[in-house]
Length: 355
Ligand SMILES: [Cu+2]
Image (cartoon, rainbow, N blue to C red; front, side):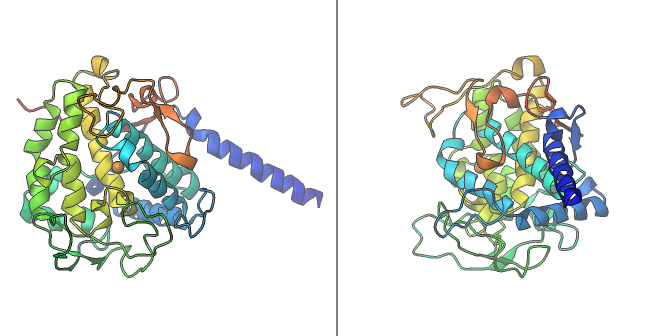
């Protein structure tokens, strides 16, 4: 009995030490582009994603809760905060923290040894190259498009221009499973088992994810205008690189094209890692000034500050049950490593501004 108790105490102590580890981390982990990962690294990442989808949720249960797994904990918090984390000044900071928390979950709860990979989609443009991106590889990637589904004429919203799919993904690690997704569509949080759907729009991706659009983004003179070029406007014709990835992969019917449930598609995390890398690339063009440059509205689309003020470095960021709250100031430096912020990672390569 005593031995069992001692073993239990030791296990508890070890788990506390393990969960405390990221705070003691001194050296940044290095995020790399998906196609530069070895076959083994790719499969370890995908294995960790499947593992976090199997771990039980920490979100307290509620009636008919669709929050089943640790993976869902994050989708749920994204759904709940949808209108307070998009088209706001903290859009990029919130998603930077959200991704770092996901990366930490994969490492601490599922034994993943690497860093969160990013997806440099500029490499998969123009449009005719889109569908053959290594990210969609059926064996070493996340699988590809869904079967073509006709647009619903009763839908008051216009279909995503150039959409080519809409059904369940046909190949890859998430195909053939009828309950990969538990939440959504939109803000629904009751249990709704669904397959993972994609609805590629190569046209949309080609238009918004090529190097010219990325360069336009990097050329922004201050954070306020930078964020607006990244996020674009809510109409398809006013998209930026953010919408380019969401609608290029998700179109009308794929979860990643759904503003609320978009993190239900694991590709979300690779797309957002690249958006974060664009922000870090922009910061590095004038790092000293841009480690503190933040602005933009607290409230959705309130760019003229008619309803509220702008965010500042003290503005709080919450990702729900999966991590402590931090401030924007804590995530301005991706390689603060406990000395100067909450994050500790780097990118192997950044974009440069081409003359
Ligand atoms: Cu989002």
